[in-house]
Image (cartoon, rainbow, N blue to C red; front, side):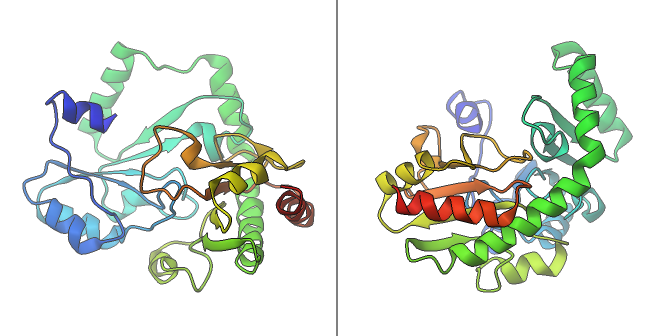
Length: 268
């Protein structure tokens, strides 16, 4: 979407590695708005949120955060000083892969009024049934997320020792490059694990197609585990490795999940 705005001349956009704090701060000079996603999808890089938000404030730059992966249970960007926070309600909030919805949150009354007016005029208002589905999911959200996060850490540990895996990306692993930063201000590490398959993208595709319990599909944050090779989609960033599998860990028994992963590697 941002690329299309750049091509149409409507915006000037500077794309920066959010894990490189100095580069992000340098790119903010003369900017109007800083948009962060942390942890990122699907590389799970972590932005130094406290530092970046303070820097943006000092430069009079607005701050928006996509907090879908972390959720409010792990980090609260509004409390850090962000202007607006986005969540995909479709994912962890609703949690059952049966509703398409998003949310925007802000503590600024004037911004809230402006966003409310835009939504009212341009549509995107959830129907009663969709709102009920989201509310149903919210009632179990903390329980589901705690279970999924616990499963994700265990699977990340085992995948990091698997002979068919060249790299595991999960901030909860002490050896992960993002661990120290995430631990300094986040209250957890999320329920998405990304890993790279040693034998290349074709092997990664076969692994995803060979699972029995884990569903080979896009999306994430549901009670059931999903995985896919992200670069199978033409729109995926070229910075994402061709052999990377994004695993959205659900609430199944962790031993059942591990057995399915092992057999998928073996039978692919």
